[in-house]
Every structure is written in C-alpha cells, then in structure tokens.
Length: 195
Image (cartoon, rainbow, N blue to C red; front, side, top):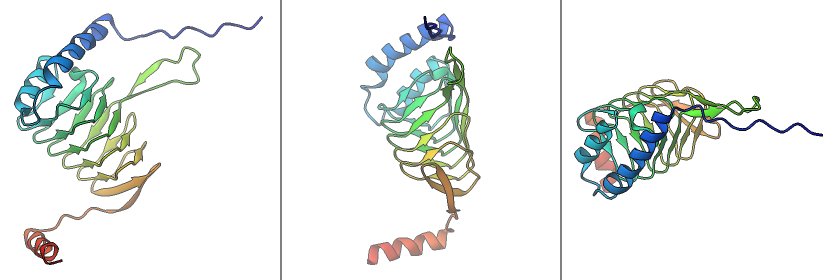
C-alpha cells in the first residue's frame, strides 16, 4: 500500500484570510471601478487596509494587490493597470518607481522538497526610479536597484544592480542606464521631431 501524501496546510492566520476577503470586496466594489485619475481615492482605500502609500503615488484601478498591509509605495511610484502584486511578504516601491502593465510581483514561493509544500514569503524591494517594463516577472526575495530597468517580459529571479538594464529569461544585465542631462534631452527631442 502506498503512503498518502500529506495534506497542504494553510499557515496564514485567520485574521490574514479574513482581511483578504474584506479587501477583495472593497477592491471589487470601490477600488476597481474607480476612474483612472482618482489616485487619491485608491490611496485612501489602501491606507485603510494598512498600506503605506506616499502622497503622489499612482495605484491604478486595474492593479491587483493581494494584501495591502504588505505594500509600501513611495512618492510618485506607480502600479499600472493589470499589475499583479502578490504581496504575501512585503513589497516596497521607492520614489518614482514604475511597474508597468501586466507585470507580476511575486513575493512568495513554496518549498517543493517538503511534502507539505509550505508557502515561503520573501520580500521584494524596487528602489527609487527603477522601471519594471510591461509583462516582467519579479521573483521572491529580489531587490531591484535604484534606477535599474527590467525589460519587457523579463523573468527576474536575482537582484539587479543599481542603474543596470537587464532583460531576458532569466534576466541578465545588458548595459548600464545613463540619464541624459537637460541639454541632451532637448537635443534628443529635436532629433525625434525632425525624423
């Protein structure tokens, strides 16, 4: 006779589960249907559920947030529509950090070698001025350095150094990010308008 596999045990507290049920109702009825420009309203709702959301942050109505009490959004940071923010562990966005549409921030994994398959929360940190481009996956425990760029559809499973552009599956560094000064920005805009 073969041994029965152990049953998965949900180790999250009852308070956590009830909080997520309450948040799901608020998200569905008040957060999700709000018009795009009403960021202040959505910041208010997130704060009611324990999120630390700075003034000027842009949580869009189509972003899904698993547990707001594990979310920190710095000033002028952004979670675009269709972002999935699976914040079992804390997820922190620095000032001006941008997470583009269809990206997945995954702050938990499972111990697949343990027969009970326990959930393992691991925080994600996205530093100031970093950009997570459309459809990127940011894995558990990853830190995206200040000013770093994770290219569209990248699978980021390791930390990304500050001011580095990475892309691919798995994501690898491809170059340094260099910001133009004001004169270069003006010249670049002129070049673009001419062509």
